[in-house]
Length: 335
Image (cartoon, rainbow, N blue to C red; front, side, top):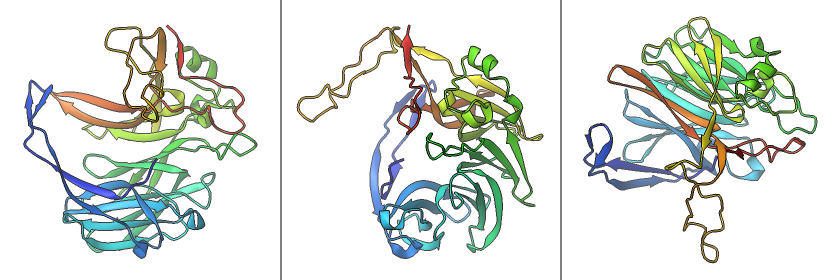
């Protein structure tokens, strides 16, 4: 993920017609905050921002862009005018995600290596005091509170360093009680041995290791309005995992399927060389006789008309450029 200075914007009048059209929608640049060395990192770049409603502040996490200090991370807390209120140094710990709920902040941190268990550190957003640090799975990538804030779900990606001999940790989802800080793990090991069945259903399992639990790499988690069910994106597997929160159980792995780009409205630009000279932005969206994989990364949930919805950001990113991965696969197939 590219790390940039934090830019804040506000929306103008927003009106919805039939829940489809957006009218009078404008963005106004308010301020830009450039991180300094105050967070223990000489050149931190913004990565994730979460709003603290209890104190009307922004919690911003990022990692050091300076190769000499690679691995360091930090937290900057800003007020809504873009003024730095507090900084928390994480020193040699990498930081991946932050979420804030009910006056509590949860920060996901990589361990000494992304191959070993990571941790989630909890803070009081009013005093900045650390409340607890809970060990979770390898490379915790995203944190999400349940609607009532009683639980925190952590997507433990469990990806290897490469495929030239690096261990491949199992992916998992941790579920943490935000009052007692007791944790449970929703594991994928129950699906190991079901590779053929899952592949036949459309789940993409192309890593060099055979186990499902090592192939799936959870990215983000979204929770239902009642706080009972979660869905985690499994980007490289082109799938979604359904999780029962009360029992910390992965109940189902659901393939996202393919998108037929030959159909009207499903066109795509298959080249990044369409512009004149060095400009690739002209675009050339057409229909092609291929089917593309969704490869979901981010996911969010909302309700409308009494119905529960989940929306995904389909990055389309695969393992094909990883060192040591000799089994090449592209995100398209004949339609």
